[in-house]
Amino acid sequence: MTARTGILSAAFLLLTACDTGADDASDDDAAAQVSVAVAQPATFGERFSLTGTLTAERDARLSPRVDGLVARVHVDAGDRVTAGQALVELDPAVGRQALARVRAQAAEAAAAAQEAERLFTEAKRLGEGQFIAASQIDARESELRLARAALDSARASEREQAELVERHVLPAPFDGVVAEKLAEAGEWVQRGTPVLSLVATDRVRLDVQVPQERYTDLGDDADVQVHADALGGEPLRATIGARVPVTDAGARTFLLRLLVDDPQDRLLPGTSARAEIALPAREPALAVSRDALLRQPDGSYSLFVVEAAGARAGGATTDTPDDDETTADAQPSRSGNGDGDAADTAPPVTPDTLVARQRTVRVLRDQGDEVAISEGLSPGERVVVRGNEALVDGQPVRVAPER
Image (cartoon, rainbow, N blue to C red):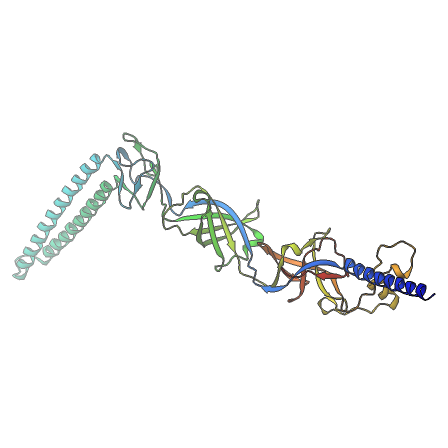
């Protein structure tokens, strides 16, 4: 009997050990393994992209300043010119003849004024000896004034005609490239008729259409970079040149004009480019990994935080449920044999047990692999970034060690 009793005792101890090991393994299986990251305050500036067309700051269609016959066109499309360079010449023959005529008239007026001055001087000398009447002296003085006025008029006509002759030459108003040649030698042109198209390439701007909800956020402190397709996307610095406060009623957009810093003059007007605009942070936010977000059916976002079972999210207080309800919430049933025995119920969740709490959050914006959370999360909380796909609120978890 003694030997039999010893065998039974050993068997009982072995079964007890196996049952304890099974319970420990079951506890580990019930706790989902997750990876967490701490929510940290961060400065998130909003960034968005807009596409547009590069335009020249100065783009002119040049026309002659007088009517005339085109004598010579000194440039062609694609030629680079400098300010003041002669581009087109009109036949000045008629204008030069008119200039010669008014110059002769000016010389005649000068001679008449000189003679009138001589006669007035002589009359004053004779008047001192009372050899002529005072009225004659006054008449000589009036003739001198008329002669001088006629001289001034003749000289003004001479200057006017000289200017008209000079206007038979069309100069370049600024440095640039001839974009289009619109007239040839032998054509008759009039004032206002375009003969050349000139584009300045030293200063290029990018015009983009800004959505109405972004317009008020654009300030002088915005960080702007332009990526031109012609340069393979190389970033170039830019500044806001103008914000046109007139909306396009059809598109609900506003014109934003960006001045691009291109010291090497590599940008070409008419080509496409993309502007990346970074706005400074307007409100505080917490940075979390994009992997932590779960999209809800209503379009909102949520995430899970890891905390002790006895804690409440965000320090909020709630009504204490009945003991039976607490037991039911703290002891989620595990799959068993279905006989309803107490042995098939999970061990109680203690206040120190780590659980996952689901939070609805407000996503402010995203930046790379991180998102900015402005509501629903507190600094320093541990956010689940791996293993959150199948979690439920209040589920026990165990945090995976950091690698």
